[in-house]
Length: 441
Image (cartoon, rainbow, N blue to C red):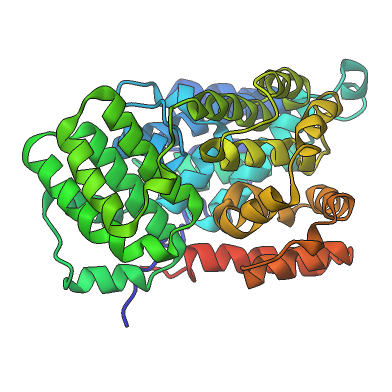
C-alpha cells in the first residue's frame, strides 16, 4: 500500500569545497546584503569570531522564521500545541530557535543534515554566551568553529535566493481545506498507512482550519474532520486526542455553533468526549510550560530556566490531564538539559513536581506521549541528556511501568541497564518510526 513519505530537499552544494575563507563563503550568501557580508568578513578577519557568528546567526534564524511564517502562523501554533496562537501573532514571539529548526526540517525547508548542523551552531553560540567573563578570557570560539558555522548557515539557509516550503506540504494542506475527502478516497488509506508525523500534521491542519476558516473552506474542513478523525482515532496518541477535544471546548466557549456541531459529530463517532476538558484551566498550565520551553531553548537558558519553572510550580502540582503532556515535556527538558549540562538553579523546582507524579501518570506519558515527543527523544543523541535520563529512570524506577509501546519499553530498559549506546540507537529508531524513512524527491 502506498504511503505518504516525508519529503526532504535535495542535497545542496551551494558552497563548493574550494570556498575556504570567510570572504569566499559569504560570496555565496544570496540572502545577505553587501553590508552584512562586509561586517561578517571584517569580524572574522579581526578575530572577533563570536561577534561575527552571533550576527550571522541572527540573519540566518530570521530568514528561517520568515519562510516558516508562510505556512501560516496559526498552523505553526497548532503544530507546537500552542492554544494561544493565532494568525496575527508575530512568528518571532512564538518560535524559539530550536523549534524553528525542527519545524523547518519537518516541513522540508531544510534537510536533516542541515538541521543537525544548525543546531550545533546554535549550541556553540549558546555555550559561549553563557560562560562567565573570567572563563571567556580562556575559552573562546576558535577560527575553525567559526568558519564551520559560517559554512553551515550559508549552505543551509542563506545561500538560497529564497527558501521555499516543499510543494508537497502546500498541496497536503490545501487538499484538507479546499475539498471534502470521502471515506473511500485512496488518500485516506494512504494516510492511515503513513508515519505518525502525518497523523499529527493532519490533526494540526484540520483543527487550525476549523478555528480560522469560514464559508466553503470551513465546510470542507469540518467534513474532513468527520472523515479523517474517525479513520485515524484508534491510532492517535493522547496528545492529538486532547488537541481535538480542546478545539471543541474552545469553539463552544467562543459560541462558534457551526464548528461545535462539526466537531461534536466527529467526537460522537469515536466516543471521544473523554478528551474534552471540562474547562480551559489547562490553558494556564500549557502557557506556563511553553514559557519553560522558551527559556530552556533560548539564550542564557541556565540563568532563565529557574524563574519559568518556579512559575509553573506555583500553579500547583495537580496538573490537568490535557496539560500534562506539555508540562512533563517541559520539565524533562529542564531535568535532562543539553549537551553542556543542566540549569542547576531550576532543578529543585522541577524535582518538586516530578516527585509528585504517580507511576500511572509516568506510564501515561511514556506510552502515549513520548513516542511523538521529538523534543525529548531527540535529546538522546547527546551524552549528558542520556546520562541524566539513565539517572531519572533508575531514580523513579520507570522500568517497572506497564508498557504498551515496545520501542519505549526497550528505551527505558536500556536506560535502566545504563546502556547509553543502546539508548541512543533506540532513540534513532523512534525518530524513524515517527517520521518514516527519509526519501529524496
